[in-house]
Image 1 (cartoon, rainbow, N blue to C red):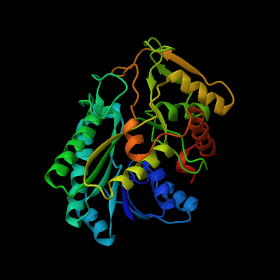
Image 2: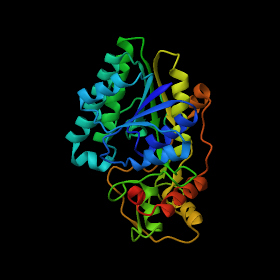
Image 3: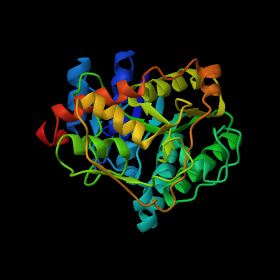
Length: 338
């Protein structure tokens, strides 16, 4: 199968492209490189011995996108491309709606014109909002509370409407939780621009000496150690979930939703201590006030993914941290050294 991966130079996209190539698929990557590096694709080629076709194209450039579809006989799309920082989305919401929603519409128009009807969409647990009980289950009402989450919710709505209007579409909406870790080779991993927005990349930069200490936002939640709990998932498990979803919908029309998570809540301090075990020494941190909008705890009910796709997580928190540290230690400045 020839699979177009949008945002394929990014963190999750590059790991998924690698697994697609290892599984025998052909991969075409589209990425505008606004928050990623083409070096990740060079390393995917190095690790797999196979060269993905790469196009530096923005999804909002409909003419360039149409040309990609004209050049390649695409069978399916895995759609990662999008701005993804929750806090930033509240500061520049128009950029998020324009890029994430309009970009997705542009992609779907190009797919429709090219006769491609299979898409795996990178959604998020943020669509569940703050009104649902845990664990989160796919049948719950959704209601995101920030612009980033609302862009994911809007694209889900668009895809659902598209699948309802045209029964030939095969659509998977993957709501995943907190991706961490890296390829076990240490050659590809997460390389955020600027100050990391997520916990583990920040811890990794503290460990490698790029940040002074970890700020823990909130130590008085009603959780076992007082710090917020999240559902962490190894990026390789997450990538495998995309391949499983692609296999499932390839011959099944309709719209499907699956949570991709471990089903276990891990606290900030538990994750910090796991990373310390990977590094081999303590790391400096300071507990400060809660951050506005943070929830005390949430995690997935991923039983539907297990039942339908035969998919579940395989990596432990310690393995996540060991792989993430191997990547960061070997690449202290990310892909800039590539």
